[in-house]
Amino acid sequence: MTDLTRFQNKGLVCLAGINPYTGQCIRPFLRNAGGGTDYLNFQFVKDRNIIPGSYLDTDFIPKRNPFRPHTEDHIIGGALQTPGNATSEEFMSILDATSSTTVAAGFGSNPVDKYFAMDRPPPISIFTLKLTNPRNQFSLTLTDRYGPAFKVNITDAAGFSMNYLKVTDLGFSDHLGKIQAEFAGAQKLSRFLLEQEVLYLRVGLGQHFAPNNDESRRGYYVQINGIYSFPSFRQDLRMYD
Image (cartoon, rainbow, N blue to C red; front, side, top):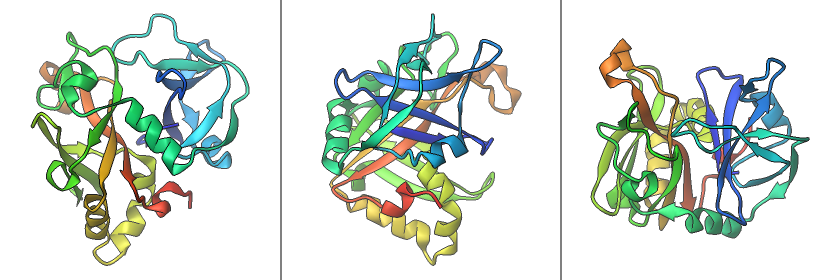
């Protein structure tokens, strides 16, 4: 499991993971009584201590005719088992094997103004971006413009940049209050990440929407679903309160 992200509805979470044998990305949903699908309940995930790096075992059934870009969507076909967690080395190996160093390589093309228009969706909705020079490719800030949230600026290996991307990583979101309460907490976190040798970012696309009801800008906007640092990571961000 590589992605554990928050919604505005705090009772729900979105998961995604990589099959370690095939490299396929899978986003699991639950089938509901009406024949549709639901995101997983936060308490369900917390009770099973599912964190980034957790192994999940069940039958994952591809959704029929999924709409681009969310072609990773699957339905959980049986009881969801959690047989353990990957070691740091295993987790890094899985991320690295499926990573790209540029956004264009990951999505197939670069988004325009941080989004893909409705008539030009990429073939996938999430990939791993590898940053080998964090100090020159990454920055993290804490903003309170529309409520407290982490935002990041990134520059890929080809020099393509995107700024002010929202971080939906559950660990960062759920511990935001504690980081705010700590003296210079956000600055300490940023400095820690910049001191690492490599960062792997899970760069994702949310469901389509039109900001400020501007239909001319309706599309799939880029967000950061996961931030993983090596060789060290902040263990407090990978634990439930």
